[in-house]
Length: 368
Ligand SMILES: Cc1cc2nc3c(=O)[nH]c(=O)nc-3n(C[C@H](O)[C@H](O)[C@H](O)COP(=O)(O)O)c2cc1C
Image 1 (cartoon, rainbow, N blue to C red):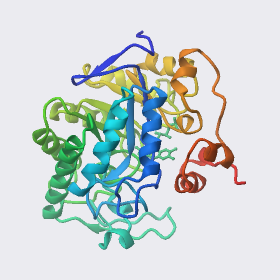
Image 2 (tube, rainbow, N blue to C red):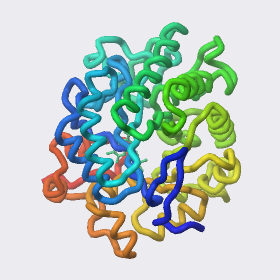
Image 3 (tube, rainbow, N blue to C red):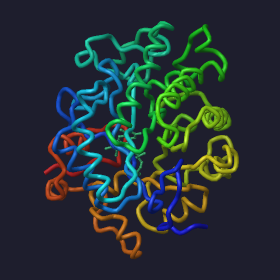
C-alpha cells in the first residue's frame, strides 16, 4: 500500500500527499455569494496546513441554485476576480484546489433565489416537517441547468482552480434525479436507472466539453441512501459511477460519516473496499468519514481509497497533516468549544452554522 505522504496523480495534477480537505459549507461568503475575507482566509489556511488537495464548500452554480445563506457563488463572471486571488494564495502553499459545484434543487431557498424550489419532480417528504413540495423542472429548464453547470465549470477554470467537484451527494439536485423516491418523471430523465442518471451524465459531458483536458472533474456521491432516502442499492450507485467514468470524471468521492462503513447490501464488506473492487479500475477514489489519525487514513487506503478527505477534524486542528506525519494524536476533538474555534480564526457565521447544522449531530459544538 502506498505511503500516506506519497504523491498521487489525478488527471495531470500531482497531489503532494493523500490528504484532502472535505468540502465544508461555511456560510461565510458575502450575501451575494462573492467570496469574503473570512472564506479566503479559511481556505488559504487549509492549503497552508499541508493538505495535498483542498475542496471548497458547495458553491452555487447560478442565482437560482442557492441552498444556503451566505453561500459561495460561481454564478457570474463577477465572482472570478475574488476567486482568482484566492487560488493564487492557495497555490503558494502547493495544494491542488477544487471548487465544489452545487444546485440545491428542492433545497434552494426562495427568499434568496426569487423562484420556487424546483426538482426532478414534485414530491413530498412526509418525514421532513414543513417540507414544501418542489415544482417539477421542464426539459428546457433541465437543459438550462446543464449549461449553468458547464458555465460555472469554465469560470472555475478561469479563476485558477485545478478542477471542480460536482456535488452529487447528500440530497441535492443530482441525488434528487438519481433517486426513485424523488424522481417520478415519465420522460427520458425518469424511470430507469439510465434515465435517472441522464442529467448527471449530461452535466459531466457538458463540463468536459468546455474545459481543457487537464482540468479535473470530480463527482461526489452518497452511497445507499446516505444523505437522503434514494432507494438505490450500492450496485446501482456503482453503475452510475462507471457511466460517469465513461463520460470523463477524473475521480469519485464518497460521502460517508464513517470511512469503514459496511454496505447495506453486503453487510460483510466495507463500502470502500467494495467500491474499489467494482468501479472502473483506473478511476481514483476519495474516501471520507471520521478519519482522526494516520492509522485511520492508512486503513481507508488499505480499503481502497487513493486519497482520504478530512472534514470536522480539519476545522479544529491547524496543521493536521503534520500530526499525521509524526504519528501524533490530534489535540482537539468535536465537540469543539466556541473559544477554540474563535482562537483558530473561524468566523462567527461558520461557528453559527456548526452549532446549528442538524444532519450531523456529532458536529454539535459546546455553546459558551
Ligand atoms: C460543517 C460541515 C459542512 C459540510 N458541507 C458540505 C458541503 O458543502 N459539501 C459536501 O459535499 N459535504 C459537506 N459536508 C460533509 C463533509 O464533506 C464530510 O463528508 C463529512 O463531514 C464526514 O467527514 P468527517 O468525518 O471527516 O467530518 C459538510 C460537513 C460539515 C462538518
